[in-house]
Length: 219
Image (cartoon, rainbow, N blue to C red; front, side):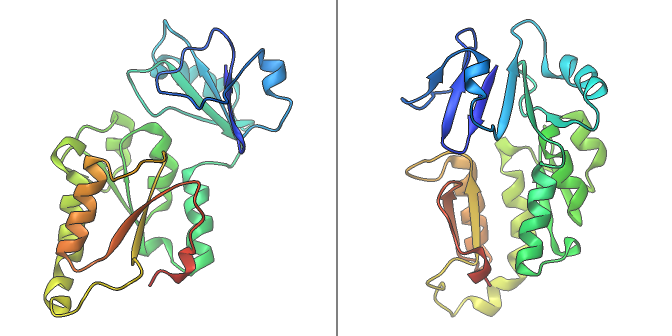
């Protein structure tokens, strides 16, 4: 087992992380890891795929927690409190800034995006998405390797290019892309999205998820 808290990350001695962990990571028995209320639980099985585990786990824990996974090649289940998922977070954010679901375009590729796609007015899957995501998408774009998200944004915002071509980009971003990790510069996929938005006259920035940002100030 592994546990994410608001203040850090911890895992049992037998848990094998697939990504670099913070230097202050706690390695201890799960009973100690749960001394503080967790934000997310993660369960890893080295011999099973996440799809093998997800169905039985959802059946056994229906209504008690939210279960999902974000990588078909990694035997990891992600577990959060009932009602806590990407869809509920997006709904809360949009409500706070007065945006209706019909105005929202969401992109996804894995089962942990299903609630997000279900809430948004337009649900876009990349071509190499999980089968469950492709089944619920209202539109399928190119794969993430072929900048599929950027292609949709170019189409959506391209009509704004001519009307704003004579203007300088605003000093504040109109769109903020939130990344799950702290990074010094945009990864290639995020850079492609930012470039596509710029082509349409939209100024975007990339911010780490743990840095507060005044979303209400974005036009």
